[in-house]
Length: 134
Image (cartoon, rainbow, N blue to C red; front, top):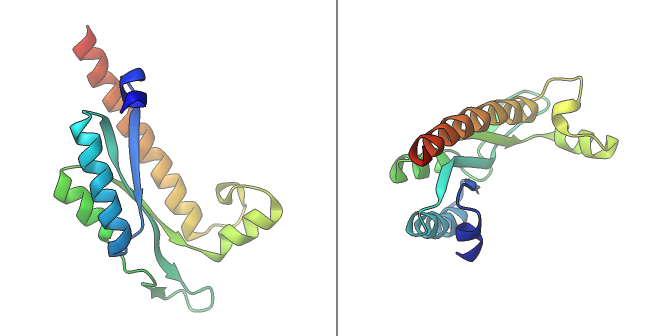
């Protein structure tokens, strides 16, 4: 609470995984952030499915969609989902972020979309904050 009061224009991004145990913890975090009147940009779902590197089929290893449902329940923006992807291991072994790999991957697509959505939400939020301080 002290940190949120120290940085009144802080922008928060809530990250969850799709399984219920994570969603339960994140619900508590969102309730706290709303109580503290924090500016929550939205919700991100990490580990959102796994795509088979051989056939491309999707495996819902930890379920899927919990982050989107959570965002809808709390009236927050769903910022995006990042799946489990073998490309993240390749990137880590090379010492580079997955978005810097030349090869395309679902994780790379997810992170790039997420970055665009966070940038847009941040811009909108900062404009709203500026208009209330004007």
